[in-house]
Image 1 (cartoon, rainbow, N blue to C red):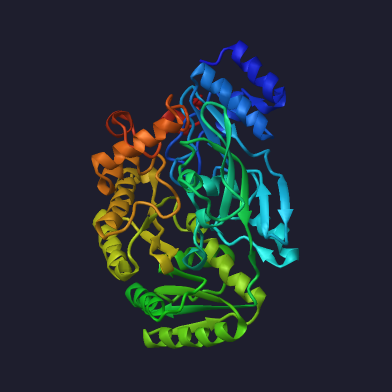
Image 2 (image 1 turned 135 degrees about the horizontal axis):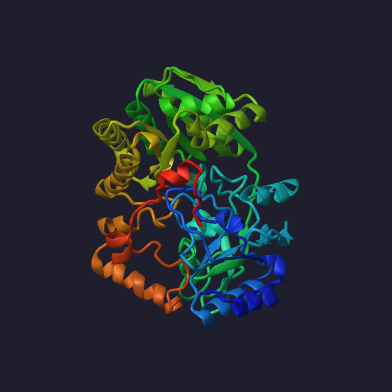
Length: 483
């Protein structure tokens, strides 16, 4: 419990305006982008510096209080859901660019800086930050580190782990360490790589050193329509097998196209069953030659129409349509789950066919929009909670993730495991594997205070938990409120 004395100690360490206790304010932090899991925290802290984060975590450790670090709350696996009677440490006020060296092509950031802001600051120097999640305008670099986010261009440029060289981290006992170094690779165990993607279970990153890339000399982008998703999948395999490494290869099916066009009118063909967005970048001559080969491959695989961006404005419009797809699905369905899994590229067509069959069996629609270049699926399961479809949708979403493992892939490509898929972890890992992960986690956090109940399956989570949050009928009617 957080008594008055402990609250005052938090206020002394961070300032009174950085400690939230009002029930209405606390409700703001009850969930992340996966709204099916909710819990109101006992306290929310808003530090501004590494020292304040360390002081807050040290007090949590002393009082044996569980804590959850939170960025922008855009996560889609329940990773930032608070713990009952626990503390949320929000990093929203830590938004400074601490260092920027254009010659060295590096930048040091606080975790609350948004992904898009990095490239905005770097752009006047001919530089940019490569990882680009669809939520890049609002998602933060701290959250990207926690989930090892990728984005549309990960097929060529990799994930967050490939672009972060060093981290200042507050460990769960309140001590501060630096992981990694100035060079991309350092001698000894790769603790930096271990921390990235750990979903807030090993500590809190408070300073993040990223490497930047030169803006490519040439960029070419097209949208190719296909009569079936299988044909589009075959085109992806053909492009990748040709030896060309595109900057991005994205796929949208008919439902995703319908939603995206309703939201932003990016010019996608509403009569297409599937569309591929393919982008190449690099030196001008090489880019042009490879782009012609991609166009030929799409025609060979049966494209019905190819739209080639003629300028930067049209290219931006195409990407606006792709990146708006997740949120746009709300225009065609009152509720939906965003799932995240990976399959081998050679099994894309099979995976999409199985998803279609599974959706028919459950009587629910599934929209597919995903990173086809590396097989990172993002099926969106559409449902209506008021019609009693939530349980079927949740089951279908889990079955799709586990199908990815069955096909030789992974439970997650970039959204993380969080609460959503913790109970599916035994489908991918054996008991010994999970035990090793647990021991590793305990070596950083012996008290189990950092984001407990996430990632690894536990009897409480998988056997006794009541499942996703469902409002009481009186709450829905506005008669009562939940605190």
